[in-house]
Image (tube, rainbow over the protein chains, first blue to last red):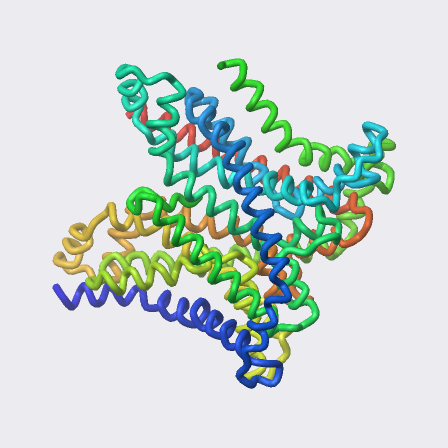
Length: 269
Length: 268
C-alpha cells in the first residue's frame, strides 16, 4: 500500500520541479539583483536608494486604498442586489459583469481615456473644456472601473451561498431589514469581502497602464517606476522596488487573511 | 426599495458599458478620430485586415494560449493527484503556498522576476534573448496558469477520494491505467475548467508578456499596447471590437450550454 501511495505522489514531481525552477529561482534572482550593483557586487545601495521613491510609494498606496474602498462601497450593494434577484436574472447580471472583465484591461482603460480626454468624446458632446485626464480622480476612476467586477463576484458568490432561512430567522426574531444586513449578512459575507478587497487592491497598487493613460504623465505610481527601470534597463533598481512591493503586498494579504475564515475564504474566479 | 435597486443596477451597468459601447461605435468612424463621428465606414476594419501584424499576433496568441493551457493542465492535473496523496501535511502546505505565489504576487513582480531569470539564463548560455522568445513566453504563461489549474482540479480529486483508484489497483490496473481509466474520467470537469481558465488567462495577459516577451514574438495584447502608443487609434478600436464580440459570443454560448445541462440534470 505504501509503495502505491509513493508512486502516486510522484505525479506531483514535475510540478515541484517546475515551481522550484520557475517560481522560486526567479524570486531568488530578484533578491540577488536587489542587493547587488550593476557589476554584481554586493551592495545595499539599491534598497537604501529607495527612500527617493518614498513619495511614489505613498501616492500609490493612497490611490489604491481609495479605489479599493470605493469598489467596496459601490460593489457590495451591487453584489447584494444581484444575489437577491431571481435565478434567471442573476445569471444575466453575472454575464453582464463578466464581459467587461474578460475584455482586456488595455482596451477598457484606453477607451475611458478617449472619452475623458481634453479634446475627447465627452468634451465634444457637451461642448465643454473639462480637464479630467491627469488628475488623481481620473486614475482612481480608472482603477474602480477596471477592477469593480473583481470586487462584486466574490461577494456575490458569498452572499448567494448564505441559506435563505438565515434571513428568515433573523427577521422573524425581530431584526429590521437594515439590521439583517449589518448583523447577519455582512459578517457572513466577510470572506467574500476579503478576497474582493485583495483582488482589487493588488492590481491597483501595481498598475502602470492606468496611471500612464489616465494620469496623463503628470504623476508616477510604483508600477510606473518599475516599468521605467525595466525600459531603461536599470534592472537592479527595478528588482529592489519589486522586492519591496512584494514584501508589502504579502504582509497586507496575510494581515487581511487573518480576518477571514480559513475554510471559507480564498474564493478565486 | 425595488425602485432603488433598478436605478442602481442601471446606473452601474451603464457606467460599466459606456466606454465599451463608445469604443464599438467609433470603430465604425470614417474619420481618423475617436472623438468626432463623421460617418459610417469599415475603413479601420479594412486597414486592420490588410496588416500582416494583426494575423501574426492572432496566430502567436492562439499558439501560445493553447500550448500554455495544455502544458499547465497536464502538469497541474498530475500535481493535484500527487499532492492529494501526500502523507506529510507540511509538504502539502509548502507546495500549495509556493504554487500560489504567482497568484498572490502582482503581475508586474512576476513579470520582473521571470524577465530577470531569462536574462540570467541567456547570460549563462551566452545566446540571444530573441532566440528564446517563444520558449520564455510559454514558460512564463504556464507558470502563472498552474495555480489556477491546480485550484480547479484539486477539489475534484478530493471529492473522488482514494477508494476507487485503490480498487482499480487491487484489481490489477497499473497506476497509469488506473489514472486514465478511473480517476481522469471522474475529475474531467475540473480538468476542463482548469484548461479553460488557463487558456483565457493566457489570451488576456499583458503585463507578464510585456516584461518577458521579445520583439519577435508579439501577441494581441502586446499589439494593442503598441497601437495605444499612437495618438489616434481607430484601428485599435476595430481590433478591440472584434475581440469584445468574440468574448460576448463565447459567454452567451457557454451560458446557454450550461443552462441546458442544468435543465437536463433537473429533469432526471
